Length: 141
Picture (cartoon, rainbow, N blue to C red):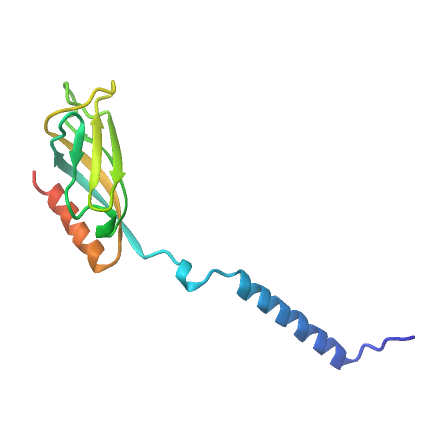
C-alpha cells in the first residue's frame, strides 16, 4: 500500500503541528497575574539613627505596606571610635523598617550613628510617598 504525499496532506500536517505548538506555548507562558510590580532602586546616604541597645526604627511609612519591596543598610558614620558601625541587620516589616546596629565585635550600639540604605520601591503613588519619607530621613543632617 503506497502512501501519496500530496501538497494538501503536507499542508494539513504543517497546520496541525503549528496548532499544537501554539497550544503548548500558550499553556506554558505565565499569566498576567504573575507579573511583578514595576520598581525603582534608590540609595539614601547619611540617614541619622539613634539606636538604643542596638535597636533602631526608620519610622512609619518605610515598611512593605508603604510600597517598599526591599531594604539593605550599612554603616556610614562615625568612621572611628566606640560607635563605629560594623553590622546592620535590616528587617522589613509591614509598617516600618527596623534595624539592629552592632559594632564590628558584635556589641550593640547606643547613640547617634548614620547608615546608608539601598531601597527598592514600587513605582506607584504609595511607593512615591515612601521615597519621600526615606529622602526626608536622609536630609535631616
